[in-house]
Length: 241
Image 1 (cartoon, helix red, strand yellow):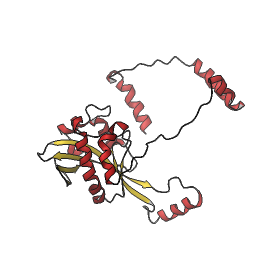
Image 2 (cartoon, one colour):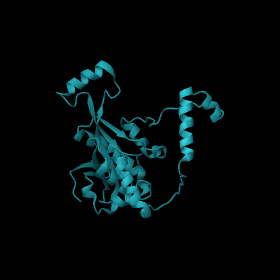
Image 3 (cartoon, one colour):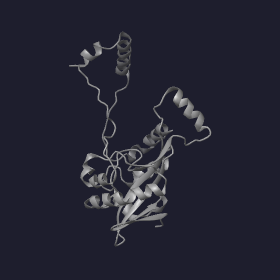
Image 4 (cartoon, one colour):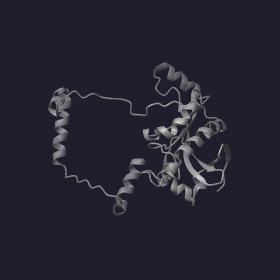
């Protein structure tokens, strides 16, 4: 397996590779084998997700040359005025006709571009080792690629003990989305329904009557969609496009 560059670790080395270079790599298949999103999911995301995502993978080896983890990462260019309305945004848009990257930031994201993040340890017992390897390598990798910010994207709370080491290296833990709560101070549906406007209530009643006339919908939970793949795949393509 070839690699573009290497970053030295206290107990090994980090190598950066592309998805094509991971083909027929046993460690890649082992890295996420116990996760709901295994290596195949990352390959699909890498191949199909559009929007300026630049996918790479950090192969983390120990001193003996054994691959202990393969960590998916990706680069994005963050628009720093995404939520800015009005005249300021108009001025920025004019400047970007000449300087397309004006008020943008290149960000190194660790994890999955379409879902929660996981550590790519080949053995779950190595997660602390992997976190320490990332602690050492991410800053150098970001500088090599001119990224101004490093983000471990949407890692579940179960990884906090392992990732605690990163907090000594300038990282801060920030709650992931969603961070919004909507209090529902209603005892039941009827009480909530009475708070809606007359037009909304009328519209909902019409939709409920239409739903009652529709054919019955059955739901079945399965572990293998192979028998329905000819129906599911076109639906996936339609949603994706």
